[in-house]
Image (tube, rainbow, N blue to C red):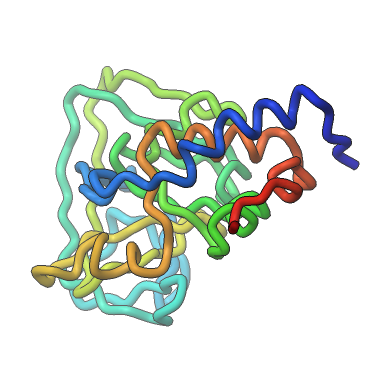
Length: 211
């Protein structure tokens, strides 16, 4: 069992102010995307993201099966990708994401700090967390953006939740998922991940967060 020490209490107290001061700018989404080989749950079972097309339905976090309005495919000839090892965010196997791709983090720390079932962070924020790393694209890589009518979280690689783009104007982060889940910027996300690394029964549970 996790046993809090004076050091971990001090670390928690140091990072909590960043978490509790949500920055409205963090709602601005940057370019996301999934590697085309990423497995996505559909109404017909698991399919590679690159094999999906408009009209197919994908399984979402809270909306059941939702129709894809568009599937945008492109090839990256350069830049950076984030490699997330199996198990880091519920993924059954390694997951390859663009740095700006939003994913959902679920943990006791999120529930304690935000009284929410999860928090949205960009993939770039995961670099350094439990083996996640950034790699430079050397050979062309096919990537996919999933587009749904509204803001959704789609199941990928078994247990990971990745954000789809919203096709409707005004249905983006602030109006959709951002209304029910905290959206963290990079500094806030890293503070949260530090708390998670302290252990399941971390010291945040004993701090006056909701006063």
